[in-house]
Amino acid sequence: MARAKSNGNGRLDEAMAALAQAQTNLVQAQAASVLNQTAMAQHQTAFLARMTESDARMAEMARINSARFAAIDQRFDRIEAILIEHSRILHALPDAIRDGQSILDSVRDQARKMQPVLGANDREKLDEYFTSVRELEQRLVQDEEWSKKPKPKVNAKPPQNITNGIDLVGKTRIWFDFIHLALQTDSTRLVTLTLLGTSGVPPVQGVTLGHHDLSHHGQDPTKIDQLKKVELEKMKTLRDFLAKLKETKEEGDSLLDRTMVFFSSNLGDAATHGVKNLPVLLAGGGFKHGQHLACDPKNPPPLSNLYVSMLQRMGIEADKFGSSTGTLTGLT
Image (cartoon, rainbow, N blue to C red; front, side, top):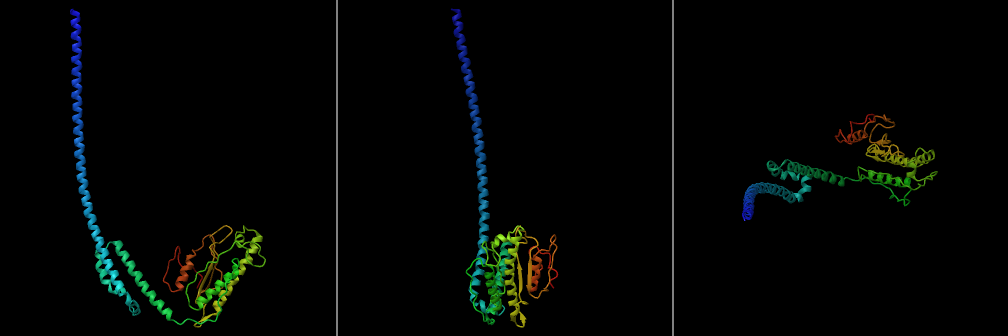
């Protein structure tokens, strides 16, 4: 009986210990829950603070942007006012610019008042606009004077087109005839012409291969000989063109003396597509001719030096063009 009572008391003690442990675990869990709730409350407080700060920043940004947009609208309104004023007086443009006036004169004061409220980029754009308008006015005056200037009378038959697309020589001759007529009648003062090749066999005596194939001769003597025949015939058309310019008189001078003719190639050696030591021919324009200026192939002057010399001969005050280092010596 005594042993049985002892066992019963032991089971009661174990149950009480387990209950105490469970109560401890519950208290710890409740404490952890309180800590978690406290942390969540802190996070919520921090989040609300950030949201409040963000709202304040957004409000400030909105205020700044509103002010910026208002300033931009103000600038556009002023620019629009200038453009409307320009449109209003455009009907008087011919008479005004003919008298040496400018439509810009009537809006110059408005533009000057705008300067303080315009940014650097806006001022630059406005200056570009005024410059382009003034240049257009000057060109209009020049064009009107040119349109009223009596044109030379010519007695020439209209050039006849050549339908054979591979007849390089014949087509080149037609183009030079057009250019001569355009210059002779003062229909233009500037002409650019690109002479294209062909893959076909041009109708030149002694030539049996395509022009493009010949240009990539690879130092083949047969191809070089045929290429010479084609190029010689093409150069004869240039010779005849220059002769026509020389025979055409304009106010006591030959048209050749009043015209600069630049003839060249985009390749120095078509067989290798080399772009150095280009062949260049310059005729007319009052330069010193009848000479061959051989430049050092290892250290040649930039071709743009010749362009600067040509620009200056035309009366254009230019001392730089592209990669030029000056003018080309030996031309005067």
